[in-house]
Image (cartoon, rainbow, N blue to C red; front, side, top):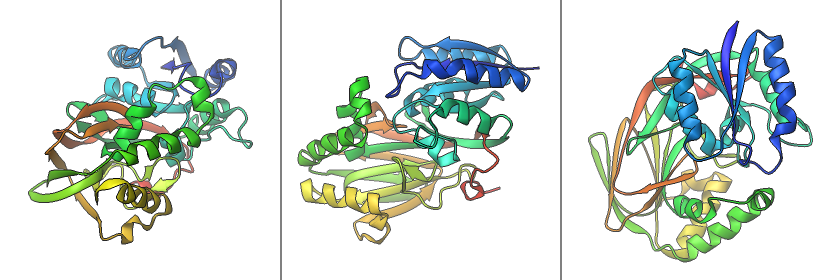
Length: 310
């Protein structure tokens, strides 16, 4: 019998996830998993529980939460053999959408149950992680506009989470109104770039936000990070950047530059806010690198093969 922890952040999403947990545990039990349930009560606790799972030699950690809770868990599982299984219980649930794991919708009224059925049975992959100023990230590290929005948004109440995209729009307009762009020096492996930057996104995966593919050719296991740099100053530049990213037209924008590398450093004349996986984190300078094949993930059988190099 396989052994796992089920780590639950009951405050991460817009609905009460607890009502689905008995059915989730029942499905795991029926498929040969002995699973213990743990609810988190404070920031950082999910990392501690993941480290315990690693030390106990468990087979997997299933996590119910948003992308921020997932980030806590991977910081406890990195460079171990313990697999990560995501049951999306947050607001954005970007990782779940990337992998094709069911998320809450009229089609999936019991998303956690549908998610665990997609993952067990499923398959596993060994993927890269990014590391930014000592912290692992699964999907991206961002600087500038998106980080300012993140700092304005978090922490959110459950009522704010229920408003969904609207709260992001309000926070985005407010952040854009106060953003002037920052002169940044960016090193990507041996290449040096100078830009007055309004947004810098370092991606391990393709999706950015709910449905936007900012790094269309990113692969989760290629030993590289994809870097998107958006030049600009002021409110108009910020709005153009957002519209370009949302529509996918950023790839045609002359103010947008794309790079790929394994080691990235960012310095700025004025400190730029940083987020990792959508959670407020730090300010520049940033030291970032890829950590190849650092995490095992459970994925559905129907996950798009284009997300992987192998």
